[in-house]
Image (cartoon, rainbow, N blue to C red; front, side, top):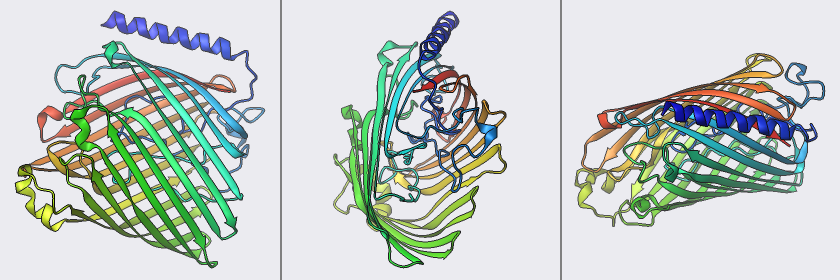
Length: 477
């Protein structure tokens, strides 16, 4: 196995050198995307299939080329090329000591991934206007709520596509292709009214673990999140937002069809601008999760929340929301498996819900990001009605020079499963992922990364520790 790993590592390095020579013939007019934005598959750090680069967010008042320390002579190294069309090609190779995330019978693997991507905007932009954190178990399909989007033009359009061609050394039957499409259209018929339509489609598979996905059941799925909304500012201080959500989840294999469902519903928010830097809001949403099979009960999820947006400076922003989530299960659903949960099914479930998103540019060279949430989600286990999730992510980025950047990501997730037999399943997961980016050319960057992934459960057979080491290159053109 050691000789095989060396063979694949050598092949990846040769492929990288070959790509560097070929891309050197192209015009040097491109940019490597921002510190926390990369189309490289950064190890297997999926968090409930919802990993997103939450830090790719434009700070208010920050213009391209403002910080001379982060750019080269023409403003493109770790900067942003302002244009309509942005394309990229990523190549990576990563070794792991525990492919299937198990405590016993660990298997090494070398994964080679080729990732072409493209995004188009109108009018032209230097940064992606949309970041989506998809999550299969979250009702509505999103791990975190979407950030507010400032509209400056009468019409704004965005479209992006990506594919990941993945090859495994351990077993060629695992080779597969993942991909996704996303788009957004914004129309502003009036200065105080904006209409928005967003769609995000993903073809992927669940992260390997012994409880759900494994070598014989990789849980391949297709999911699509559609959101439509209207934002109406009817005075200088007051504004309202109305939205509709439709989320469809479908797994390939019949044994996983118990998770197939359609979520849909409406949301509304009333906001008051207390000051130019602070606004308070009250909001609610009602989302129905309707399952294709009668193995899981349909349920209505009512969220009532209050919160605030605080833009302290051009370098610091914070969003907080908290309230209640009320889950009401279908009274017609009956199952012998759920006799121990009759109270949940008959009376529903009330639970505290919470979400926080923050960004802090501490210095000209460093930046912190924090995401956190707590709520009841849909189940990914055949033996559980639902799971209550506390999830958080802390990211830190530091710019050593104009061409070298470092990142640290820490993820913690606590999942409390409501088992049909009344027993308790508690899963805790930690992931620590440092990485280092090198800008070799104005259009070419090299990334070296490591990931330590650990799960502790009161079901000992679910425990695991996984180490992953990778190297990748990404060219933009």
